[in-house]
Image 1 (spheres, rainbow, N blue to C red):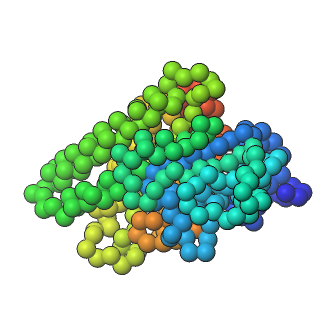
Image 2 (cartoon, helix red, strand yellow):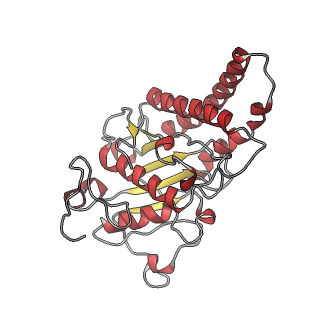
Image 3 (cartoon, helix red, strand yellow):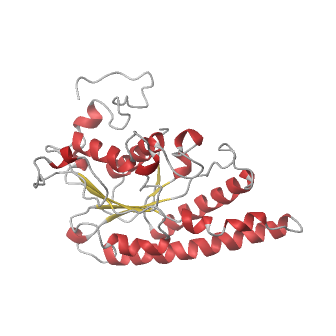
Amino acid sequence: MGATQSSPDPGRESWSREGVIPRGKRVEGCEPLRDVHIALLGDSTIDHKAYCVDDPSVEEVLRAALSAVSPSASHSSSDSQTPSSAFGKEGTTPTATNSVTLCARDGALMTAIARQANTMPDHATHIVISVGGNDALGDISILHRKCADVQEAAQLLKNFVDEFIAKLREVMVATLQKYRWGKEDKDRKNIVLCSVYIPQFGPFGVTNIDQASVEVAALLLSKTIQNLAFELSIPVIDLSRVVTSEECLANPIEPNGKGAERMARAILEVVRVHDFREDHHAIFPQRKL
């Protein structure tokens, strides 16, 4: 990676040209990224290559970052097309210290998580789950309902959030029971949940959906997802801190290349910083991206 460079802000590291891997001591001392295999589960928040044009997706950014801190090159085990250079010679797959698998699928609902998890390799060490956006969009009609007063509107939103979180809780409890709770250390997966970010209908010129209403609903969902992660004693990535504006999106709801880079930074921060040896909650990112 070259010599360590000073940062104008002593409290923050300088970052490589790709914006993902911090330079200097942070890279040289990144033993937590040995033998890491990240499985990405969810919807188009993660399976968003189609929306990145020529920019790398979050899977590709993670693969490059993990490869850069591996003694050997990493690879992706994805059903999606992957550059052949990632696999070495044709017909062979190199052994990688760090790697990533894309199990997420564009359009997936919460109920798809169990099926997606069944496709990840046994040696996966970390499961990152970002799902629920399509479930929420299916109920977006509530934003058009006429309410007599603020109290009625608040109750409507509360019912929406309660139903959403009940479904997500069921999915997460089933995932934790199968891959973490009560498992031997060698079989335990490190599970990370992602909250939602705020869709940007207004900035993309969508006029039949009120942006202010969307922001209120998304922030309620985000906070409630964080509370669920606290209840389950797992780390959570607050995507409202990551995908922060229309500049991170290809359309009102799907991340672009900039969004991918920022999500990859947040995922790598969890993997590096969080102590998964004990079940405890933390919110990431813990610094500005």
